[in-house]
Image 1 (tube, rainbow, N blue to C red):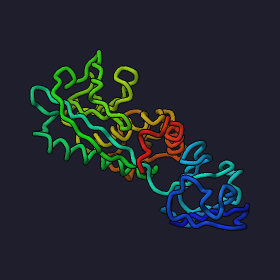
Image 2: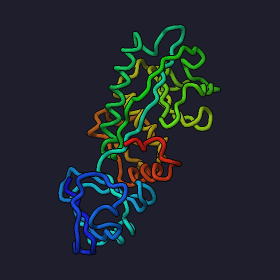
Image 3: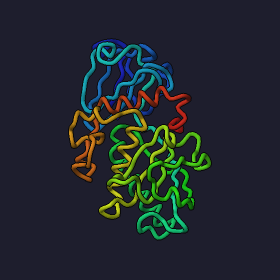
Image 4: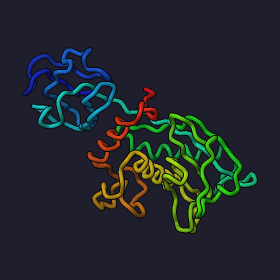
Length: 274
């Protein structure tokens, strides 16, 4: 990690080379008086916060840059800094109908392998924004009415939800159109639903991953206008221009918005695990 914090403006006074995340900068030589910073590697990313334990205002910094006065560029004071990703735990539910799994999945292990591939795809996007998705719990339920979500959408049973995790439900099909995924507040709460089949056939793992990543963006507070109508942006409305993660973008403002939502989350229940 190439991030260096300085106690005075214009890179003066005591300094601290950041090698790990600090929920409280008071324990470092710069304390709460950080006024400037340098990052000398194009591959590095960091989050700085105005309050302890990664709360308050947040700024996302990446790549090579010198900030002679953090109060002018970000805010004052800086009280926490994050250099590793926040981990978001997923509570995954797979919905069957009379023993049939969504799409051509032949059983639990086949479904999990496909879902993990989709999660890995989503991590290639959100990893750039210092978020990491981890499947923590997986359940299979037989529920014919929920196997294909059609209007009026059924509510997700409370027992399918898990406190402190993001609930992701995989079903056979969603709605009447070529829809792969949706987030349904308030119909079924803050739950992400991903379909395995659309009218034109079975959904590839990569498209499930894109849809999961897109709906996660909504779950964490960013909407379609944040994409600035750039079809390469993850949050742009409509079909993706590519299923290669290298061709999908996130803007700095979108990343900051997501972490601002997490910073304001009551108790940071969904990501305060590391």
